[in-house]
Amino acid sequence: MQKPLAGLTRHNVVRECVAGVTLLAIAIPLNIGYAQIAGLPPTAGLYALIVPTVIYALVVSSRQLVASPDAAAAALVASSIGGLAVAGSADYATLALAQAILSGVMFLLLAFFKLGFLANFLSKPILVGFVGGLALDILVSQIAKMLGVKIDSGGEFVDKVVQLVTGLDTINLISLLISVASIAVLLLGKRFLPAVPWALVVLVFATVAVVVGDLAEAGVAVLGPVPAGPPTFTWPVIDWATWLALVPSAMALTLVSTAEGLLVARSYGEKRGYPTSANRDLFALGLGNIAAGASGAFAMGSSTSRTAAMDQAGSRTQLPSIVLAAGTLLLLLFGTALLEDIPSPAIGAIIAVAIVPLLGIREFISLWRLDRFEFLVGAACFLVTLFIGAIPGILVAFVLALINLAKRAATPAIDVLAANDSPTDSLLEEAPAGSMTAPGVIVIRLAAPLFFANGDVFTQAVKRAVRAAPDGDVHNVVVDMEAVTDVDVTGAEAFASLKQWLADQDVTLAFSRVRAEARERLITFGMLEGEPVYPTNRAAVEALTPRAGWRDRLRERLFPNGAHDPAAIADAVTETETETETSGPPTEPVEITRSSN
Image 1: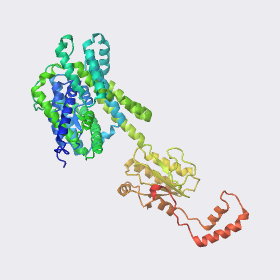
Image 2 (image 1 turned 45 degrees about the vertical axis):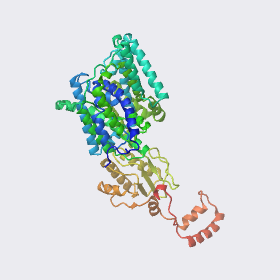
Image 3 (image 1 turned 135 degrees about the vertical axis):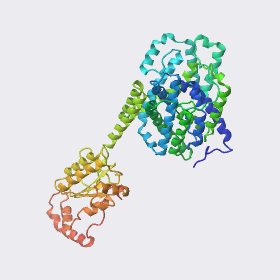
Image 4 (image 1 turned 180 degrees about the vertical axis):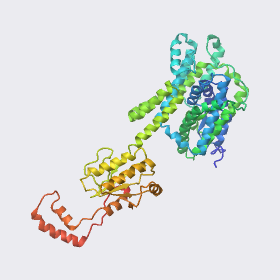
């Protein structure tokens, strides 16, 4: 088992501590903003950086993946709990704690039963659409905050847009100036001096401006008092019906975090040359979320942006997360007074700049160019998430994923293997008339498992291949099973009907290249009942193709195009008889495919 803080040595401890200070400067302003997005007090975002972060850092296998609440998770918390309690109330905070605990339990179940693959159903178009819809919803609230316009941040997207537009006559010009200056500093600073924690710089200078200029009296909204002290351990007490009502949103949080977290962890592990364990990472996220729910925070996942920042800072261990936790604890103990006058427009600007890339504009353009269907999948998920809600969005995402999977599975490559070492056109379309692998033999390859989605497709393809040949010419059909890794009941029933049809046509069925692990299943389903099984396609064709006699070879030599040439008969007979005496029957096997060797 990997020891905690793997990769830490006396040679890199200073560098890791410096990276931790950088992470502290990045995380504190963002987590305050994410807590506001979630409808929770600033302390909820800060508490997430202490106990949950330490537990996660000591357990996770990835040396670099940073765990924390992010914008998508915060928006999902707000949209899912907003219908159950009033944002900012004690009941609302209790539900957020329960949601984090449920998410943690689900992470643990995924790790224990090794079900992390379920997150693979959230393909890139689905994730882009889902996160993009959440991001646009967040952006509207942050724009209102930057303009000083009051709207209901927990309302529906359309309602918030209407409130923002109708409230434009109440714009606070000082708030607007703070926002514009903050955005300019963030964008220009990131371009020219990316190593500087510009979010912290913006908060410091904006707060100084508010205090010196007494801008709160001029209508600029500020963060307000932040309770001092460390997080206290608690446990949400709610009825079972409420626990059950939180399950769908907790599931959505878990799956989105799993899909993103495992991908980022694996990519950085491969990039920096250290091993990672998906199940251990899920286990760490589970413990971290349970700790978040028991310490006054809210659901956490992986942070791609902070992980990238730590990689750029040279960090290769989890020590920066420990430094982050220690620094946040010191801030809560001794520095909460410094947070009271942080202007809300500056927080809105920081969050807006952070979430604009999550809108997925570049990704949607790329999807449009590469695959229109994938684009439509992403766009549908985006619109449902934006206009109906996050939970319907995740449900639509799964339905679209299943439709996409079924669409691809129902149209596998089904090829007649030709003797020229390459497959012919797919039999999903019209098969070439008379196409056979060898005289009397058709070898057909199904490049997929045989199951309910493609069983009938394969059956019809084989029938078309047999019918396309001249009547009575096909005597043997060989099914290349090299790519058939599994069979289900529906696929086996479709194949049984094919066997009966071939028998009615006096066509013998055979198999080639049957996988050892699939053979028992084929026998169980009655697909393999004494039919010959050949190790290669070449062996099948050699065994099933009748050898040409000297008369056939004479006829082919005399009349290659079906024409008569009497003048050549005498010479051809003499030459053929000589060849027959010296060479005998042909011994070279028929070439089928490269994979059949």
